Length: 559
Image (cartoon, rainbow, N blue to C red; front, side, top):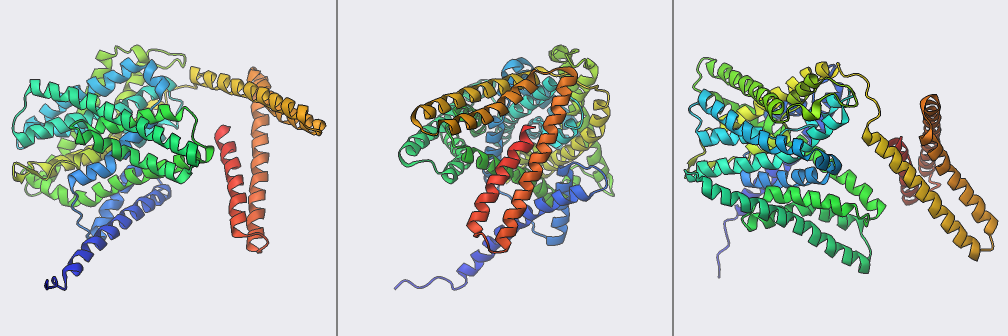
């Protein structure tokens, strides 16, 4: 007879599980509360800064003392964010401005790693050079989400915005790959250029291949299953959430780059989506789910760094050798110097390598120097930097990883200061931009809407003709087709107007939109009232309200 285990074994494990669950719930709650606080503050403060402060308050009030495993953290946070970057990357702008974007996303990353790495090692000799390079690499990715709200408040030239977006979506992968090389050099104690070159080729080729193959293979399998059994929106959305993890794990299992695999899987997903095979309901729900995932993961990372920052900062102050307050002041000086150096290196790189080519006076007539300064200060660091720095190993060669707390504190400080600097500098710089004329993207949108409206009229006429030939209710079909077609013809006429006529059409469209929204909201209120009065079932109320919600969403997004 096997003796039973200790009676308290389960009790010892249960608090650990409860601690993880409670900590996760508190972090998500902090993300929600920080959003409320950002709206309540009398000053316009970037949300990431509020989230970091919320995390610090949570640490002081709850004493969670979280200790994150770097590999688990990397797996949980980075693949979905990188996948989403690849999925939503602007393909037309990427192809048109590929040279400029590649210069920023690849060349500037290497330039920043070398410059900031040697600068940090020179300022802090106690930090080994490979760790300084790892810190510089993780500081190289930019995060336009952190300054997106500021950029949207001014008429920024569309091409400038597209270059910044394309850069941010590609430099995540290049910066994190450089960080992995630096960490490997620290852990192994050596670095061979020839060996690194061969490894880099395999990391890139294998990672991209694994990502594309995962997306195409899963999509093909899903399509065949849907043809036989029908499409289930919930399962398709769940598969899209699992795709980045599958691509990442496959690449890592092959010894390739899981980072590039996640990005490549997202880019492949964007092309697969253009086939239009998914049902409209699936696409709408999938967008909502991924928006929530992005908001939750970004917010959770800022809250986590805020929760860990007080403890880590104390270790960082000790690492720089400060006593009697000198350490904290010296640490602050380091953060300011690194932030300014990043802005300066960014400005110099754009000035020299791009030679102002994409930022000369364009159709918007904006001054090149001001645009260059916007590019330099728009390089705020954000969630990818925090996620990357938190994945530094806890140990190297059996000893604690050197200067880990210091690197995390410096990275967090640069993130905070770069966001704050962008919040101050960008509004001032963008104030000089005058109103922009209609750009090529807007003209392309008008042409696309007109082509779609003409295709709709042609389809309506074909359907009505077919039904007219076989239906006894020919007059009904003809009248219905005429009513629907007139809506599209009115839209086409409106897009053909110019000057005062175009302005009058816009006013008419705005009035039409307000009237339709008023009607939809009245319908929704009526359905809810009938449900409260028990004149409609709950299921029927949900279905009818969902129809109204979809119609209202379409109205608010198409005008």
